[in-house]
Length: 164
Image (tube, rainbow, N blue to C red; front, side):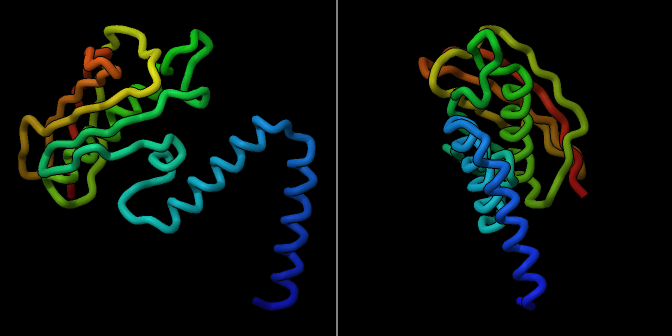
């Protein structure tokens, strides 16, 4: 690294530290959590930033089938103290997308996603169980059940994924 690049890096670090000094401990822990997720994202293949940030755990990954467990913490709760519906949709999309990828073994994108919310998720974990129900040349159709810790279905989803 050149001297001027090192100087700029040191200057940016100093600016960052000054900004962080006004944060309380909870804010600092969230910032550290985001930085760790970004670091993990750059150093581990197969997952992207949000998987790391949300601390999703792949419980089962097989051809056309996946289970992903998500810790339900303050980062993902809504003001009513339950898992935010958008995060539930993201969890379904991640699980179904991974199931579709494991079926095709090539990258894909979500064509559509439909989530039905049955009950609020208030426990410590939510688990998304997804599977491919129809596999075409380029398009897979998937389903997903989101369960609470007691195995009750809290949300269901369907999605279609396009693969090149």
